Structures are given as structure tokens and as C-alpha cells.
Length: 279
Image 1: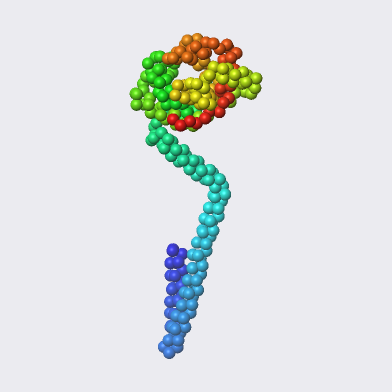
Image 2: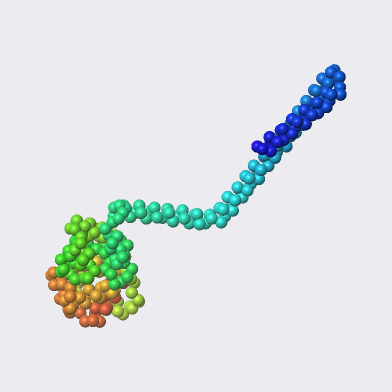
């Protein structure tokens, strides 16, 4: 704008100077034609100046537009993959939290405190911990009450269960029973050991309590796909009387198994793929 003002003033001054010069040396009859000629010349000069000014103003605009376009293109090239990755991450995060709230209610959920040991949605990746996903709700509920009342011993689970209300215990049992079970840890391949374990499981009639496919039933928990370490710890606890089955069935059965049979049994059970059952 400053440049346009300066050009306009210069053009007007030049026109007036030319007009004054001509008027000072010519008679009136000639002066009239000189005035018109000068004005016409001045008009042409003004038009030419305006055209030059328009071009001068348009050029920076075109250059600016080109620079901005080039900058955006360069930014898209450099940042495009990161922006796309970020968008996909946020989209996946939104989907996760939508599923999270649909599955267990608004954040925070009480079952989140269980994930450190028992894994997300009750499915651990460490075979030393119990898999809760897909366990019958009555079983989970009874075990939490047993921990809370000191009938089942655990330095970690005892205080945690004792801090829960009956409503919270029921809520946890219902939540974990609805989750899809998976194999916690696939054990190393040992066909002979797995075959021996299968024979032991069949001979002891484990499906009578633990259900078809050993995925849990009204009388017993899911043992298919549980971690090998967790299963061995529990069978040894039953065998040694450190854990008590209210019916004493598990204590009696585990007491009859040799150490080799215990290892074969847990190896076989941990390799099984658990089945989802309606709760």
C-alpha cells in the first residue's frame, strides 16, 4: 500500500508540472489543446502506472501462494507418514476404549487392578498366574470368598479379596466369566509326556468336575490352557494339604499321583486350547 501511494503522488505531480509548463508558454486557444493533451497523456501514464502496480502487487501474491503450496507439499511428504500413523493410533485407541467401556463399564473398572498378575481381561501371559478368563462365575466367586475368609491362603490375594464387598466380588466373577479364554503359555513339545498326561486325565475322570474339554463346569474350574507352573503349584498344594477342596476330592486325587504323573498331567493340560462356554 505504501508503494502504491508513492507511485500515485509521483504520477500526479508529474502531470501537474507538465501542465504548468505548457500553460506558461502558450496562448489560451493553444492552452486548451495542451491541457487536454496533457491530461490525456497523464491519464495514459496513470493507467500504465496502475497496470505496473497491479502486476507488482499480483506478483508477490503469486509467489506467496507458490511458496505456501510448496511448503504444504513438503510438509505432507515429511510429516505425512507420521500424521497418518498418529491418526491410526488415535483411531485404534478410541476403538479400544469403546470396547473397554462396553465390556466392563466406564473407567476406572475394578478389574483393572487384577491385570498386573492375571493379564488383560483375565488372560495372563505368565504361566505362574491363574487364568480367570472364561472361568465359571460361581467358581471365581467362591474362591474370592475363600481368600477373603482365610480358607485359601495367599499373601497377595488374601488382603485384596478381604477388601472387596460382596457386590464387587459378584461383579468381578461375572466380568471374568464373560471373557474369551486362551492358552496361557504353550509348553515345549514333548509328545511322550503329553500322551502320559492324557492317560492320567482320562483315568482320573477329570471331565466329571471340570467339564467337557476341561473348560470348566458347575463343579470345577477351567483347567485347559492354564499355565503349566500354576497347575503344578495347585496340584502339589492339594497333594500336600496346603490347599483344601471342600469336598476333599482334589486332595484325594492329587495324593494318588506320583511326581512324574503330576508333571505329565500339567504338561498335557497346559497345551489344550480352552473352549468358550455359555455362562
